Each structure stands twice: as C-alpha cells, then as structure tokens.
Image (cartoon, rainbow, N blue to C red; front, side, top):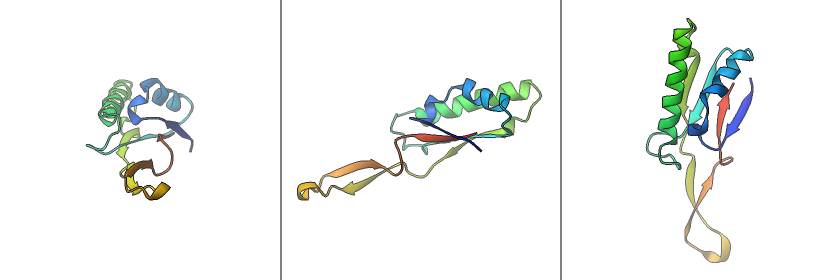
Length: 104
C-alpha cells in the first residue's frame, strides 16, 4: 500500500489514478472532505466527478470499476481555543496535515 498526499481531494488528477493501476495497484481509495465541509468549496465534488470519470474508463476497458472509490473523511477542520495571550478567538486547525490522502 502506498500513500500519496494532495492538498485537496479535488486536486487528484485522473491520470494519477490510472498510473496507480498501471503500476500494479489493485484498488485506489481517494479520501475527500464530507459533503458541506470542504475548505475548497467544491473539492470533494470535483474528486467525486473525477473518480466517476475513471470508473467509466475502467468499465469501458472491461476492468472492475469498483476498484476505485471516494470515501469521505471525518471533519478535516476543527475549532479550538487559541492559547496565545488568553485569546478566545477560534482557530482553525487541521487534525493531521493540510492535505488529503490517496491510498494506492
């Protein structure tokens, strides 16, 4: 299993997914923000459209279209109190990194 990180699930190019299959991957999982929680406004929808495009290509080639999936992650951004100077301003912070993983 290989893990590729992109800044947004919507930035995944269909060529990346196809290259993973060319490299011997049995399946590809694209993790994207859940509906309504995308920092890029429509990145999750873009990822879904691109994965559906790849599914159509795989089906056309006679391969298993189910071998590529989009899975929503948990909320990627959460609010927490800033501890600097006693500020009560909410600070947006990524749980891990500012990116989404693509499992190959």
